[in-house]
Image (tube, rainbow, N blue to C red; front, side):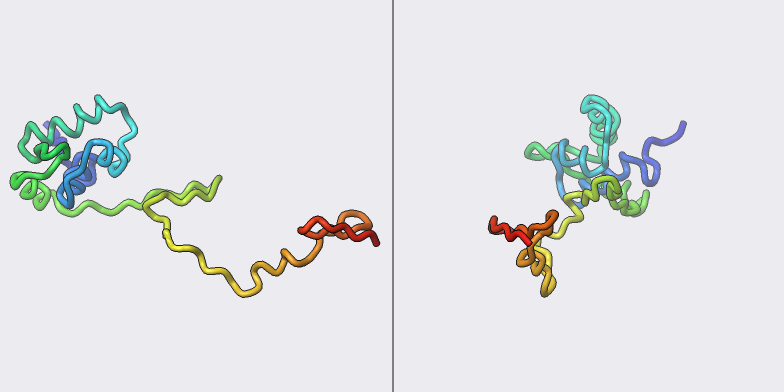
Length: 132
C-alpha cells in the first residue's frame, strides 16, 4: 500500500505548517491550498493526522505532537511554493504584498498640473477650460 505521507503532499505540507504554529482548520485550508470541500479536508487531512497520532486539537487549533515532529523530520522539509501571480489582473496575493507605502518618484505627479487637450480647448483638472 502506498503511504499517504509522501514528500510534498498536501498532508505533508499541513504537518509542516502545524509544526511551526498551531493552526485552525480555515488557516490550514488556505495555507496548503486545499480547493475541495471542508468535509473532504476533514477526511483527507485532519482525520489521518489525528488518527495516526501526528496532531491533536489544542484550544480549537490543530497542533503537532512529538510523534508528528518525528514523522516530519523523517519526511524532510517541504519545498516552498510561492503562489502564482495572476497575469490577467496583476493581482499579488496578500502574503506577498508589502504593506508599506510605495516610494513615489520625484516628478511623478507633474502630469496633474498640465491640461488635457480636447479639440481646440485645454481642460485643467480644476475644471477650467481655455479655448484656443
